[in-house]
Length: 320
Image (cartoon, rainbow, N blue to C red; front, side):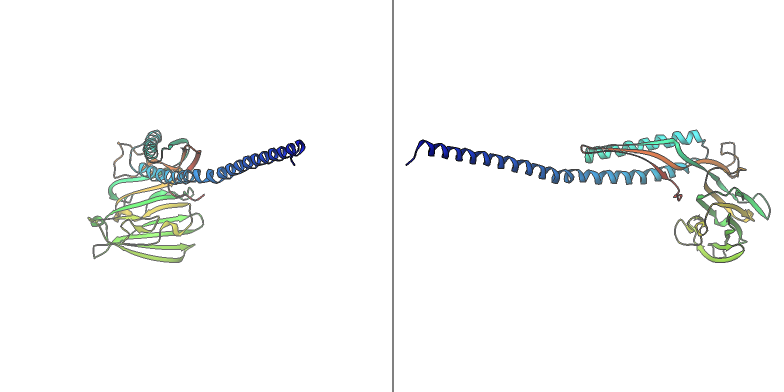
C-alpha cells in the first residue's frame, strides 16, 4: 500500500539519482575537454615548430652564401660601401623569404643585418694576370706578415698556365708554432699544372702530396685552403693541414702568373698592399674589407607562435 511517506521517499530517491547523473555527465565533459586540449594543442603547433626550425636553418645558410658572394663581388669597395651592399641584399633576401612563407604557409618572416655587431676581415686581391713577385728571385710579396698571423678563410689562386714557368715558384704558409705548408707550383711538360705541397714541423717533413691539375681554357683555379682545384680533379695538402693562425709569403713568384684572393680575419700591420681603388692597377695586390661574421636577426610569426633570434653567421667557417 502506497502511503504519503512512501511516495515522498520515492520522489527523493528519483531526484537524487537525477542530480547524480547530471554531476557525472558534467565531470565527464570537463575531463574530455581537458584531454582533448592537451592532445590537440601540441599536434596543432608542431608543424609550425618544424617550420620555424626550417626557417632558422635556411635563413642562416642563405645569409652565409649571400654575404660570401658579396665579399668577393667588388674589388674597389670601402667598409661603408660594403655595409650598405650587405644591408640592402640581406633585406632583399629577407623580403623574398617573406613572400615565400606568406604564400605557402601564411606566416610572417623577416631578416635584418646588423653591421655594428658583425666582425670583419680583409682580403688581398690581385685582380688581373701578373706574376706573384716583387721582381727577381728570392722572397716575394708578404701577404700576411710573420708576427701578425691571422686566420685564413679563403685563398684562391687562378693560374694562367701558358704564362707560368716550368721552374717552381713557392707559396709558404707558416703558423706561430713552427709548422708550415709549402706549395711548389709549376707548369709540366705535358701542359698540366703541378702542385706539390710539403708539410713540415720545425724543419722536419711530416707529409707530402702532389696534385697534377688539368687546365680549363688554359687556366687552373686552386683552393689552397681546402687543398684542391675547384674542378676537383687534383688534390694536395691545404692550409688546413696545420693549425692557424698563419703568415703567407711568396718565394720566387716571378715564374707564377695569375690572379688571387686571400681573405683573413682582421687587419694586419703593415698592410700587404694599398687599399683597393680605381687608381690601383688590377695587376697589383691591394686590400679590401670583408664581413667575417655577419650578425643577423630572424623573426618568425605564425598563428600559434612568435620566435625571434639573433645569431652570428660565420661566413668562412671560423671555429669558435
